[in-house]
Image (cartoon, rainbow, N blue to C red; front, side, top):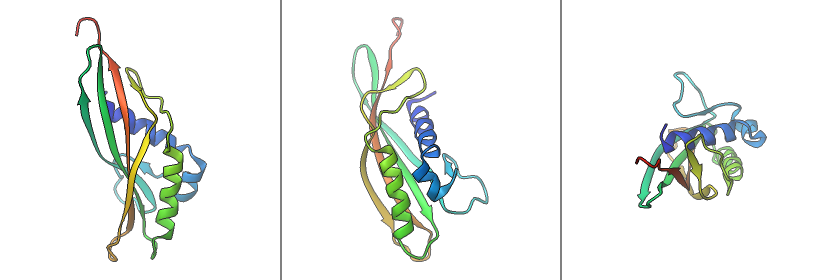
Length: 139
C-alpha cells in the first residue's frame, strides 16, 4: 500500500460515515466513479506528495483534491454539500492503515468551484497532511 491509498481510504471511510455528508450524497463517495453514476456524488481526484528527508522515517507531505458534484441550477447545493465535507475533514486526525501514520491533523487548504453553465456544478477541496512510515533496520 502507498501513503496515497492509505489516505484516500481513510478519507472515504470518514465521509461515508458522516451523517451531514450522507444527507447530501448518500454513500456516493468514490475513488473511481462507477459507470452510469449520476450526481450528486463526491470523488477523490488527484493525489500527490513531496518527500521530506529524515533518517529513521519516510515522511511525505501528502495532498489530495476532493470533488463534490451536483446538477442543480445554482451553486447553493454544491457549496452546502462541500461545506459538510470541509467540516467532516477539518483538522481531524486520521487513523491510517499500517504501516502509515498521520503526523498532523488534516488541513483543508483551499476550495473553489466550476462555473461552466453547461456542466454539472462542482466544488474542489484541497487537503493536506504529513504521513510517515518507520524504516526497518535493514533499510
